[in-house]
Amino acid sequence: MTREFDFYVIPTPIGNIRDITLRAIEVLKSVDLIACEDTRTTQKILNHYDIKTKCISYHKYNERERVDFFLSELNSGEKIALVSDAGTPMICDPGEIIIDELIKNGFSVTSLPGACAVTTFLSQIPRDSEEFTFIGFIPRNEGQIKEIVLKHISDNLVFYDSPERILKTLSVIKETRGDIKIALGRELSKLFEEVKVGLISDIINHFKDGIKGEIVCMVYADKNAQDRELDYKIKELKTKGFRDKEISVILSTLFNLNKNEVYKRSLEL
Image (tube, rainbow, N blue to C red; front, side):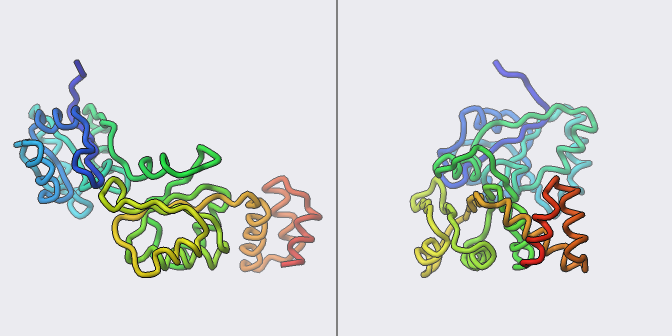
């Protein structure tokens, strides 16, 4: 027997409609209201599992205006479930505003385990470390992409992207960090699921005729990242007008580095 809560965060399938837990189905049937991004998308799942619970839209454009309504319903004793179109709510999906308000107002909140593209992807690719950095959807702007991949050069960097932009994104990453190792997954849990691991040039060539489906990607950490990070910091300070001696003092002080080595490196760049 499980404890009852006021508000449930419930993952839904990311592709295969059978990837939903028995408990999730039970809760969706038992609550009084289901908040969802797109009622039409959620209704397909509800129809498949014969769930008759009423749905109401809750997406990034109406999050704030729905808060008072949800609080009123909960105060009257109603139970509510939150779902997204696919995967786990709050992971690149709406939910932050209502969860914050629920906690402030003393309502009990729980999240059910379930489908998530990040964990589904990471559990099937080789990694030499458990550590990774997830940034959600990578920006469209080339300058921002370059800044992010350099900032996280020593991390296994995981991100989402659209099929329309991913090849351009990979080209920007290749231009910034060279022909490095990445992993890319598409259509996870679906009929045409595909996961590729290799050099960026090989991945780009594999999908040169186009790519379809939801995309999750990981850029592998650079094992020589310390030297590259130092170069990045030096270049950043140079763009701000600092001289080589000033840079050596700043970086050696902030990061416990050898001042003479930093100075020598700065002269070379």
